[in-house]
Figure 1 (cartoon, rainbow, N blue to C red):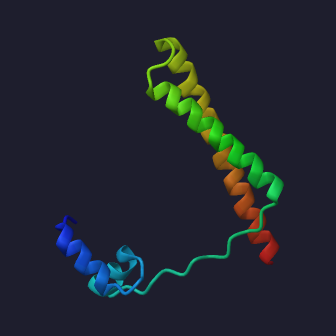
Figure 2 (tube, helix red, strand yellow):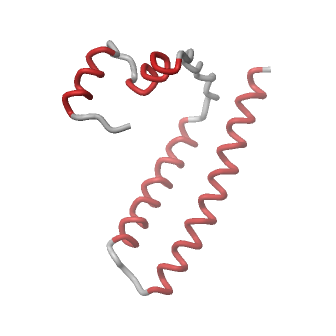
Length: 104
């Protein structure tokens, strides 16, 4: 939905500190706000490792976006990034399942 800057400002004033999107869904669609689920506890060491991996991935993405390397290099990087993405997705599911198990 597109609004002018003035309309956006007025909407922000009306939502009274709530997230604008959630407020609009509740107001315009008469939806109740979604409840956030309890996040599983994660070890600080795992969080540090994941943060480091994310930083490395960002550096790789910057290099690729800057045009660094040959076309073959970029293809290999994209393939590696896709493999990393799949592994991170499996890790995410494992962490979420562990959190669900902890709640039982």
